[in-house]
Amino acid sequence: MGQTIVYREWLHRNLNTIVPISGLLLLITLLRIANPFFLASWDSAITLIYGMSFFLIAACGLTLVILMGSFDFSVPSVLKLSAMIFAVLYPSIGFLSIPSALGVALVFGYVNGLLLAKFGIPSFMATLATSMVAEGLAQIISGGYTRMITDPAFRAISTTMIFGLPAIFYWSVVLWLVAVLITMVTPFGRAIYAIGGNLVGANLAGINVSRVRILVFMICALFAGLAGIFYASQIQGAHMQVGVLDTIPLFASVVVGGTALTGGVGGVHRTLLGVLIIRWLDSGLSMLAIDLNIRMIIFGVIAIVMAILTIDRRRIKIMK
Image 1 (cartoon, one colour):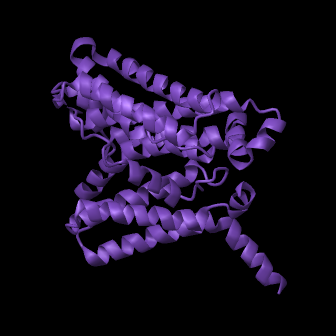
Image 2 (image 1 turned 30 degrees about the vertical axis):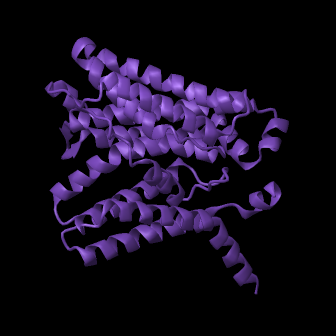
């Protein structure tokens, strides 16, 4: 009886890790059975790496926000706007377009955090509003046209091959590690967990909740901006369809990785698994000629199921 209780406690503590890893192994097996060409060559693996690298960068920032118990629906729009600014300014000012694009992204992150922390506007509403602003600005800047850049140095940021892998892969791993270190070994990271776990308790513990919230949204926007820049470099430009279909997969990757929507549970270290699952699933379904709308439905269902499995029900009872 005692061993059964210990086992159940262990299973409950590690469910957020067991489910994603088991899901990833099952996914690879099923996709290989359905399509033997899935990951059958190095070229296909490289294509998949390109597809998931910029996505992982954006997902890392979003994870910090969700870990804090908030939402940021502006990530795909900020990603698009940063990519567009980078592509439009690059011909005239070169790589100085990078700080320009990231500066605009940080402004959006600051506004998102300010609307929540100082004005008490729910994060989902605040970020939906700012996402529309970002979309409008991207449309104005682009003039409705795809902005292409042919300069080899522009594309080299993401596509330079290093030990057989593109540079964007190494950038994404470095930024993922930075995000992991922020959450796992710094007082700031512990404050994020504290706010996500118990907002009242975090206040009583002396944490400057407003400042942490604003900084988290700024970091999230910074990661979105970086993702946009690397993606623009990868595709040699920017267009208005960048990020359009990424909202559901982004949230799904964070939840599938084991970060609870209630906050305080999970972390960036788990998001890597979630991104692998979602991007590999998307690639496998594409190879099976599954319609895009069907894929979006599948991602939505997966996000719902994982939210049910990983959500902290004790928090829900308290909130009720």
